[in-house]
Amino acid sequence: MSDSWYYDFMNLNHAVSKALVNGRLPYEIHYVKDIMSTSISMFKVKNIERIPNLTSQILEMALMFNFNLCTYKHPALGWILCRYICNSVFNEYLRPKTVNLVAFNGTSLAVDVPYEDIVLIRDNSMDIIPFICINEYLGKIHRVEETVFKTLAIASLPIALVANKKMANQLKQVAKNLGNSDPFITGDDSLLDIVKGFNIDVPVSPLDIYELKQKYRNECLSSLGIYSVEEKRERIVTQELVNQNDFTDFVYQDRKMERKRWVDEMNKRDPSLELELIEEYEVNVRENIKDDAAKAHAVAKADGTYEKNVNSNEDGKEETPEEKEERKDG
Image (cartoon, rainbow, N blue to C red; front, side, top):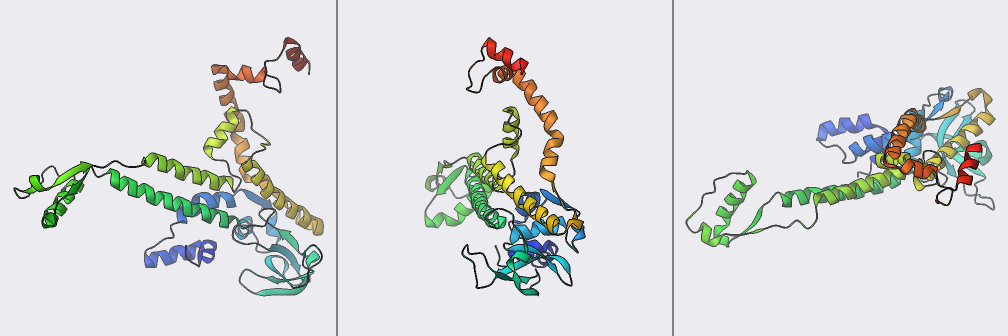
């Protein structure tokens, strides 16, 4: 990835314009569309337009690529989203006593601002830029895709040809004809006697490599708190629809709580803002949750697993008649 990835991805129109000139687009561009745009669209903030020039998209893009973000009520500009730089004096818990504030265009906004006057906003509790993790997975996916293409190229060759140096030109012509699926191959009388061939065994199946690519992609989604289609289906079938104590859900809840904390603190300092966090991802899931659950229950009833789950106690054992009666009464 180029050193200007931050500028390119924060200003995609400019990146595409450059690509039209030099004929190249970043390899990561389609994953930016599929993975990063999904992450950026997961949360919205109602009434965020009451903060001048700020939108939910700008906020989420900033969280994707930046750390040390905060909002500050500037005497002339009002509330503004910016970055803070710690000064050299810290308290006993390594919290800065004052900070300097810088706008995204590099303009200095304020110096020696008391740390208590800013409102921190982070993507996660560790304030680690999500793109760092995404970029790592993109590198893995890129290497896997290159391996897929190489494996497919090898698999497309039915045989390997061996001959002496004198036969080099004829050998190239034979290989060319094979690559073009030409049924006719011509050569000297000695061609059959000198050229030898043997079958090529591909060391690994392209499908296995593709599954590895999907695994990396799903891990990348999980690092953003996004369930893959397969994981969502599994959760529905096992009736684990809400409040899952698994890795993906922990990541999602962490991201949500950091945004909720910022919204609450902003409303506390300026009640006129009336900000409200909206979980777009959860809203979309809830819209189809009843239909998906009904289908899953129908399948479970058909194969007999539904009654088994319903009639089992917390230990997974079959309920006694007394336990069944107690459950009905409860």
